[in-house]
Amino acid sequence: MKIQLRYFASVREALGLADETVEVPEGIATVGDVRAWLRVRGGIWADTLAEGRALRMACNHVMTDAGTRITEGCEVAFFPPVTGG
Figure 1 (cartoon, rainbow, N blue to C red):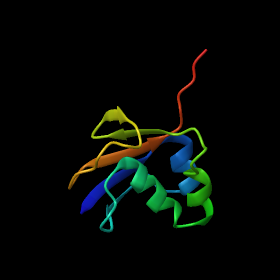
Figure 2 (cartoon, helix red, strand yellow):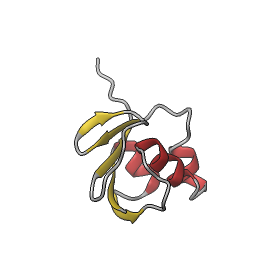
Figure 3 (tube, one colour):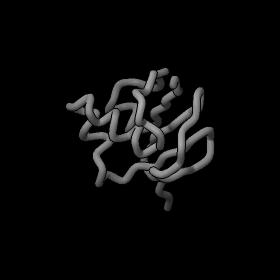
Figure 4 (tube, rainbow, N blue to C red):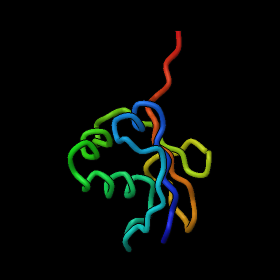
């Protein structure tokens, strides 16, 4: 299945990439699966998307958690938590 990935703010800066379209392998069914699959790329990907790292995710412009199921053509976004003051 093909999905669109978008990276924002410090995630985009670290990865050097704003967006990409990927074909996810069979068995990748949730936003959390996508995050884990991307970490397998190693290096900065593993560090930036690390399991314990504070990271927000959205699917089709809706804030989500790791258990949200992905669908053909969906957009998954990764970005740091927003702080204010």
